[in-house]
Length: 333
Image 1: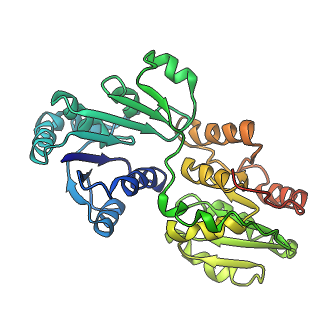
Image 2: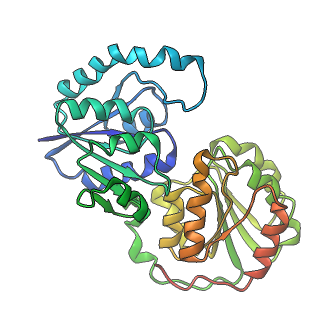
């Protein structure tokens, strides 16, 4: 029996790839999974649904800015380090598979002390601090984006592997039903921007919908934007979903010609795989400008459009949708 520890930050863009990995491997009865995180939030709900054991561990955040917590929080880890050692030994962990951020760092360092295998996967085109530190002791480093500069910087090509994104098998289980693509009578646009950062998109979109009545829109609101439901319901060419699971998302992808999205690497690769042209609106103040860099990669390699959320966003969306009014998805990638 191999015991595998999973850990990552709380964004869906990093949860889904490792949940996908779990879904690929869960049928192997020789593998046992333990989920490590510092609070009972989204991860805990996923663990309950998938029967993965959840374990709370204390952790501290790496702050590259002035904060009084920087003077005392690192000291806590002199004590907390023994918690991490204890849990790795308690569950007889053989492998740690990590995405990124502050919870992953202490767990991986403890795994290194115990000489356990450490695998990390970087979803974004930007190298994050925790992963940069862990990469020094990791067994293997996996990349979504083929960032040769980072691989050369680490100077250990034998352990740096470009795998692209890890797509959920739940999304692909019905792939045989997708091959027969039917051309839409009208342009079908999917707005998939996730929960926290989609308000700007929704506010701009609702100002132009009256002038785009010959285009069909599908809007996924997610948890933090359900208050938009009453506003979007006024438009006859808009179909609304509060939430769409990975098992059902393929049906929306199948009929979509164009998607308006944020920067999530997982979503961008899913949309590309289903042959959907993307209009990407990265967050203007993202850390290390990583959202813009993700978007630029798709612009340079897959002809995506990238818009500035602060520059007449509603007019730019209106211009592009009119430009692509006759565009129809041709096939899967």
